[in-house]
Image (cartoon, rainbow, N blue to C red; front, top):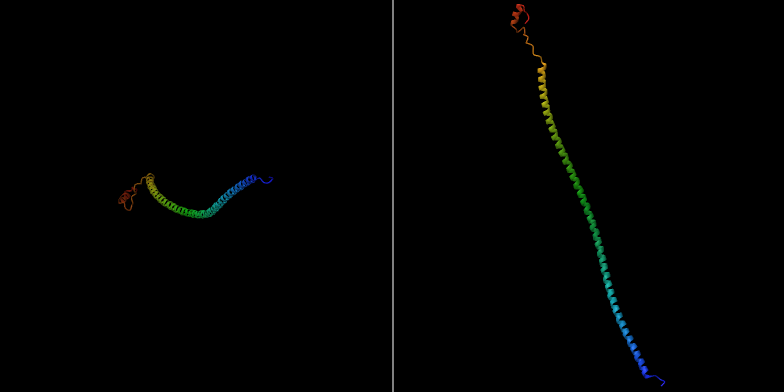
Length: 171
């Protein structure tokens, strides 16, 4: 009797069997959990790779967009510079045309004014000449004393001989 108690041995074996089964269950659960985690890690890695690919794609697209934007701005700047040159050229042409038109108008105005001044001067000169002539006529009438009676010319006077013979001698 000092030996092994079979019931205790069986209980111990049952306990060991339960512990081994519990360990196997935990190990199986750990393996399943590990497999789930590995699968999730692979899925995450795959998603990460997809995200990296998309990011690279977006970065490349962004680079292309940036290049296109730079090109568009460069083209816009060239167009604006060309438009400014066209507008400046057009403005210079219009200013030149306006100045030529101004010179033409001034020349026409000067010609018209000159003609009007000449006509006015001629009219004024004619009026002044008329006034001067009228004034001269009036002055002549006022300043001229009455004309003396005509003196008979002895060569043409027939009565001269008669008066000379009578002795009156003076006409």
